[in-house]
Image (cartoon, rainbow, N blue to C red; front, side, top):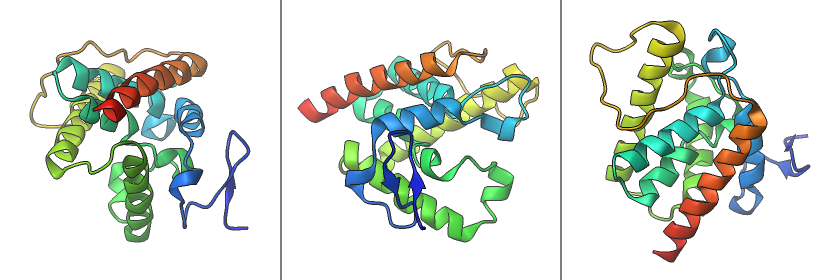
Length: 181
């Protein structure tokens, strides 16, 4: 078979992704239903809300719309591949290669020429939000340092349809701004 059937009933080939097959509505829907921490948090907390929280943090820090959009989309590949926990993922070299190809195509589709400095800011925010997810939902500190947050993210349960709509709303606003600039 070689493909997955997406929410919008597209045939998507994760091992040979085409930019034209990547769909923001498929991404928003899937991430809103995909649970972080392999489902081990006390309540359902999606990759979608994590992504929304990351984008809002980038905006609160005054970063560019490109970085904020990158934060929103930084886990987009998981909509087609799955969320694998960091301790396992780092041992799956082939998966990491597949994920990198797909994630780069997602960035390429909506944020042309994302720089290494922009990627660094995106991953700093990803780690900061991750830290606070674990301290707020698990009451566990996972880093030796305490990242500074400028936003006030929610770590509560939020219905997937609300997150899906918020994800899309942020996406359309930021992508319009990025495409104008």
